Amino acid sequence: MSTSSNDTDLGGDEQQFYREGIAAAVELVKAAPTWAAALGLPQQSKPRDAGGDITGPDALNRAAQDRFIAAGTKLTAEEQAKRKLSGLDTWDLVLDHARDGRFPKGTDVFLMKFQGMFYVAPAQDSFMCRLRIPGGVLSSHQLRGVAQLAEAFAGGYADVTTRANLQLREIGPKHTVDVLMGLHDLGIVNRGAGADNIRNVTASPTAGIDLQELIDTRPLARQMHHYILNHREMYGLPRKFNIAFDGGGRVSALEDTNDIGFTAVGVGEGCEIPNGVYFRLTLGGITGHKDFARDTGVLLKPEECVPVAAAIVKVFIEHGDRTDRKKARLKYVLDAMGFDGFLKEVERHLPTGITLRRFPLDKCQARPTVQKHGHIGFHAQKQSGLYYVGVVLPVGRMTVQQMRGLADIAERFGSGTIRLTVWQNLLISDIPAACIDEAKASLRAIGLDYSTSSLRAGLVACTGNAGCKYAAANTKAHALVLANYLEHRVQLDQPINIHLTGCHHSCAQHYIGDIGLIATTIAVGEEMVEGYHLFVGGGYGAEQGIARELYRDVTASELPSLLDRVLQGYLEHRNAPGESFRQFVLRHTSDALKEVFERTAAAAA
Image (cartoon, rainbow, N blue to C red; front, side, top):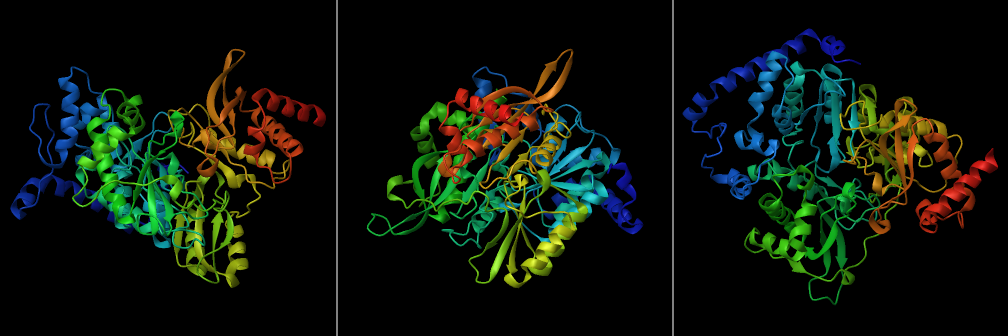
């Protein structure tokens, strides 16, 4: 559905309401200096020149920039843009472009991301809006409201992301403010959802309902979210930043792939600290650069997590690279300073009364085992007689009709709660046992599945070149082709994750998939076609590992038959029915694997 075709989807009264809202907002902005001063309210920051004196929360970021300038190095274009206009002061910029129906140019493209608006040309001549949904938990009312915005002002669908979040796409330049105001009315504040900011805070998707969890992480995700929204110094970082809380439940939060990961552990009797549930602090995860977050030796009480995270971010602000975007992530600060040196700086920023408690990892009780596909299908909750269902979303995409249907199902059979996951699917919780069959039928009626045996259950795909300028292939389309081709040829009895990512940013985290695919362009004769490099053996948590490359330059058209050989070869040559794909891969060298898969192909010919 195109953006232009959606202009008439809203009724006349409702369209008029949004139009009047934009006009009123523009007039308020024009009058802001006058009425803000009269009421004694803080006025919006004005663009600042390089020599301006900055005090207050913005001083931390400005001082970091100044140090690079004093050293004779040149700030990146993004840093220079932030120096002139704080990303938090870009509301006027969005209003001006919406009023005139203009797309941004130059660094304005970057600055509008601070309001969650991404101009994604040339892939699409439109905006993508990224939301903020702390812990991935939203209500049926909010999902229904997002569906209305998607239908009226976007492409008629929403994508679940690998940060348990939502994106709306195909938004025209006149509708950016419509979408933002509509989201804020729903209680979804997406300020800082893009650009150099802390991204959506993730948590265990089964938090509060998990039979084996050590702690409910939803309160921590919400506290972190609101801390970010209300502390100006948390914006304008050297680059993006990810934070996750894992409560020890059956479904992982993938916290070991985040810049800051908090992993719940138990401490038993007989230790020098009180027994109970704590969090291990891990730092530096960035799997696109082949690094997982590493344990720091620090053990935290739950109430210490948010202030410690804030202190870590402040050290990153002070020491992160402002001259090279490729090196402006926390991993590179840790590489330069070392973990001990970095943690000493963190202690300098901690509130009075909080210290970094060192405690040996081997004295902590191990995290309970992850159920690899616990995010799919029906599972018992800790609440007696209640179940949650993990719903398979084809490559993370939902139509507005499906969104409304899911909201209805959550209200009719559950508590009206929807939980997004990092696996690009969602859970509906609190379903009584007596309602399971009816819930299944309702899901099928809207064209969605809940089957754990489906290849689609472990399929993760980034936006691809249909909506992202960096991607080299149409990952979502190719993922669906793979699923359609393989699901009738391969009968799996063990969960397998297949991750397709479009570029080196690795939004789909191809290095941690059982099978990982990164897009490339391949010369076939005089033509350049879409294709992939194929990796095998990745994992996370207890199976943590970076996948290794097995095949290069596989065209998209050749990919389905190659994966058929790979999966059939695994099923025919594994040691026992219970051997996982990753265990099978780790037993073989790359050459041995290729030989097995070629023999499988020859036998099938």
